[in-house]
Amino acid sequence: MVTVTSQEQTGPDTPDEVVLLPYLDVAGQALAVFGFSAFGYGMTGGRQLALQLLHHPYVEVEHPFEAANLATRLWPEPPTTLDPAEMPTLGIQGTRH
Image (tube, rainbow, N blue to C red; front, top):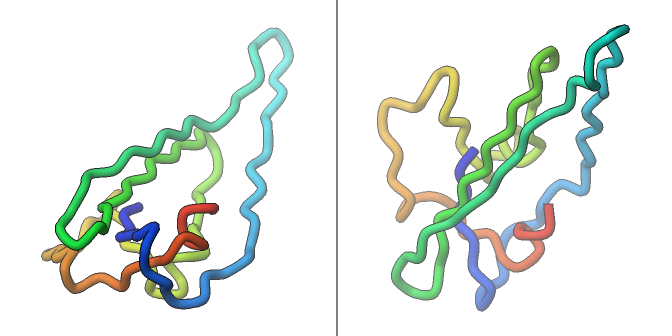
């Protein structure tokens, strides 16, 4: 998932949804949990291109920002084009999710 954020600008309202991911307990194995990482790259105008990577072995995760057109899913079906300059800029509230 990719978003554009800014600590200095206000942005559109963001969904307050929380996505709960289940743990999977299989006898004799460690708990199957999800993997998550996030990182960003600086852009002009104090904005940041933020990337979130999330993997769960058994659950397809839908990010609430994607449904609100505030984020773009890059996998498994990437967009044909991606122009961060054309994406909405999320304010500080967008960095808390």
